[in-house]
Length: 81
Image (cartoon, rainbow, N blue to C red; front, side, top):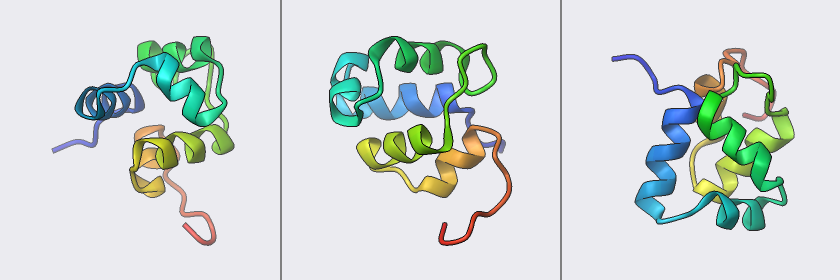
């Protein structure tokens, strides 16, 4: 079974945790329009998340960072991850 892409992972987790894009923006400091772009296009759209943003999203959504990185299409293992 393939891993969900970033958009799917975010939608599923936000729905489960009852978070809006605005609430996630407040928790992460990432602007709401960027979060909405990630929700719409995942990590492959014109607005691409940085590694720091992915780490912030993982922490705010209480998801393992490696899962978020894989969903974003970053397959390499980073030191300490």
